[in-house]
Length: 132
View 1 (cartoon, helix red, strand yellow):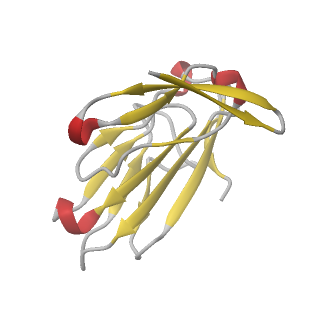
View 2 (cartoon, helix red, strand yellow):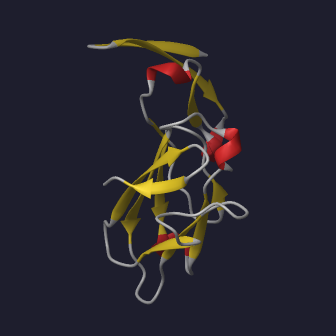
View 3 (cartoon, rainbow, N blue to C red):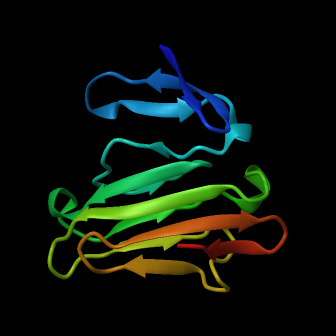
């Protein structure tokens, strides 16, 4: 199924994939640079360009890792967001860069408090950078 959303900057065409708990919306026109929200994740997951990943640590029951795609696999200035929807005491979300890529010069960023989030932007040949 596809769905088109009209925005101030143009339209974005989305593609729906899944059935049951694996439902997800994907961008068909990445050039529009609109983030897509995934269904809530409860385990390790590899994010995609222009995706906003929601993570439920209570259901996960332990630390969860969200891995960024390789810089070579995304367009320059691609955005990825990660947000903790619920927090389990003592657990955290680890946002990991792929391979030798870095996030602000580090291999990973940890989200440790309830409803904490991070927005990360790609800079080709340089790394990922926190922008929010």
